[in-house]
Each structure stands twice: as C-alpha cells, then as structure tokens.
Amino acid sequence: MKTTPSPIIEKPFWLRFEYQLRRVGFVFLLAIVVAALVGIFSRGYLSQAHRSNDAGSLTLDYERFNRLTSNADLKINSIPTPGKPNRIILGGDFMEAFRIDNLQPQPANMYSQNGKVIIEYNALAGREKQTLWLSLTPMKIGVMKSTVALDNGADISFQQLVYP
Amino acid sequence: MDMVLRAVAIYLILMVVFKIAGRRALLQMTSFDLILLLIISEATQQALLGDDFSVTGAMLTIVTLIVVDMLFGLIKKYLPGADDFLDNTPVILVENGYLFQDKMKKADISCDDILLTARVDHGITKLAEIKFAILERNGHISIITESK
Image (cartoon, rainbow over all chains, first blue to last red):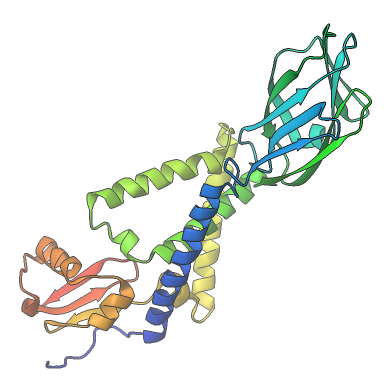
C-alpha cells in the first residue's frame, strides 16, 4: 500500500471511545427495553400491585409505576356493611397527585373533605362485593403516598411512583 | 416551565441515544432508516408539546431547542475535546484501495456500505479506484477518487 498525505487529522482515542460507548450503551438501552417489558415504567408484571385490609373487606389493584399525564387505572373492591351506605375514602397524596377522569359505576354522592375524596354508594341489602373502577391521570412527579379506606375503617396505604 | 424542561429533556435523550446508536443510524443506508427517523420524530412530538396546542407553547419549545443547540455549539467551540466527544471525529476507512478493517469495525461500517456510497455518489464499483473513503462527523462517507 502506497501512502499519501492524509486529508484529515484522525483521533484514534475518540474512535475507541465511540466504539466502547456503543457497546456499553447498547447494554444500557437493552436494559431499558427489558425493564419496560417487565413493567418498571408502568403496565407490566412488576407494576401490578394488589393490597387488601386484614378483614378482606377492601381490596385494591393499582399500578406501582405510572407516567405523568399518562392513563392510570385503579380498581377498588369493597364489601360494605349491609344496610349502610358504602363510603370509599381516598386520601393522602391522592387528591394532589391524580386527576380523576372517569369512575364507574357512578356514585350516589361524591365530595371532598379535608383533602380526601369520598365516594358514596347506596346501601346494599346483603353482604355483596362492590367494584369501583377509577381512570386517573397522574399530575405530579415523584413518590405518591395515598390511602384508601372503607367508611371509618382502617386505611390501606399504597405508594406509586410517577415518572416524568 | 414544563415546556422548557420537556424540550431540554428530549434534546438530551435524543443526543444520548443517537450517540450510542452511532453514526450508522444517521447514515440512512436503507429506506427503513428514513422511516425510523420519521417514527422517532412522531414519538417525540407528543412528549415535546403534551396537550398544549398554543402558539406560545410551540414558540417556547422551538426557542428552547434552538437555545440548547446554540449552547452546545458554544461548548464545542470553547471547551477542548467537547467537539470530538459530541460530534465524533472523521475516520479514514479506505486509503488507496486498502481497507482499514479495525477502524471499520470500531465505526460499525462495512465494506458494502463504502462500496454503496462509492457507486451512488461516484459510479465507482471497485475498491481499488478509491483513494480515500472518509467517515465524516455527520455519519456520511466521503469518497475521494484517484483522479481527483
């Protein structure tokens, strides 16, 4: 091979850097994809969470990880005392952190009190399970600590991380 | 405030991802590369603007992106090595028909990529006719022929 004056100044250090960065970066990007598949960034196996109170009268299905302004669902199953209105109380950071877009079925009454939202359904004759589906939009970034309680019963507290 | 932060975050994320993807991602060797870039722009649009459809919102995003780009321009200009770090450095891949395999491996460029550019830009089909093939900072391959 005959040599001719080089038209550019080459910097082998930066070529090596580019090569190493691509190798390490690929592993990093792959890790992000795998993390997303298992639910680290919401909606996946690791994101789904289930909590219930000791008596089993209140259960909660929620997403541990949520993304700002992206849809988040919350399912609350409750077994109210027969003959008494079913009051589901959501407190903690809930009111500040989430916007309620939709809730099904529509409650008989819904109001807020001392930073808590109270969703009230008419009394049922028997000891039957009622399910409430909430469609939410996370409005704050960070760790949100919310509580859900049935009437004046003990709280179930749950944490959700909201990504930017 | 969030419009500015969104724009800065997206700019930085794209910069890191394309830095990792390497120059090959910008080479647009196949027609799918163009489609990929279009999909990426579509995916970032929502994150950039959110649900803000105002002219002021669009103006803030555009101004922020340009300002960040100008800031990086200043960093590249005044900070030694920043230019090489952010924009890579040109690499000679072929000299007088001889392939530098090690450099090609590091730059993730194949012999076919070089020959494709040579055919498209210069109508050259043989490696021996290439005096220099240089992988530029922007990911494009410059072909300098023997006659030049």
